[in-house]
Image (cartoon, rainbow, N blue to C red):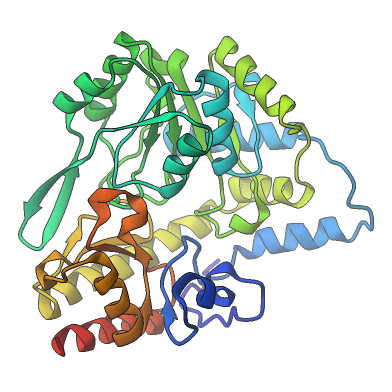
Length: 393
């Protein structure tokens, strides 16, 4: 079956955070929103059909995770990443963001240190700060290659910073810089964490959205590090079902898993989401062909962005995107005095709503994140708006 991804979607008045909340996010509705990490494409028809079929039964009561749920997760991890997962390793939360806080509460105490690698997904900061823990930053290193930026882990800094740390939150693949960590990088990281007694929570929500020839390796699929790893996956980004709030948390170590599970129960989390579970099961069992076609479409949009910037916006640099539908853009050469000036320029001159780089940490100052999970027309309109505004500076 051939699927259509180049679709002009009208999402206004659907309670869309991206489209109906612009005034709250940007202070105006007069712009093109290219922020918020969901895609402006239809979810797989198989998922919509499964939800419709379930809703033919008029009762939507409390639900459990059935054998189909566990088999779906196991088969997906085996098929996509050659990782054998056991039923008892699998827990579930209403999305990965809650899992961050459950892990913080499970394995650390107030004033304990937790390490992250900025610029990185804002909820990592929030889960640590809101629970009165101490953030330890191991910033990624920039390697400039023409108009591209390649990001790498700073292992020398990491080895020093891990002293006294209880938990590390790893972003793999990395959001927003789009890195897919190699097996060598993950092994070096794992050895340092194991040596220093640090648990790794690996947010792998973008693990299905990896561009060839890159290969994603789940942190816990490296057997040496299974006992210190918590792996978080979800169909939400991959299959554009983020609003259904379903995820799987895979924890091989029994003691670690029991601690995490107890914290979930203490927070009142022990039942699933009826529709979310149906979506997850369907995504992981019936939608692989849809995903393969999506990756081809996103690869085309990624290439289009790279070509456009090289030919039309040489003063701007972009990260080498190895995964995700997100482009990390470096605006430092435009010489805005403050990040707020850059934000205002994009909102009021270019009329574009990007994710502000500042929310990804201090390393995101004068950067922006663009979401290219959309129609060709929408992306091209955004690129033209950006070029027109920059040309007028």
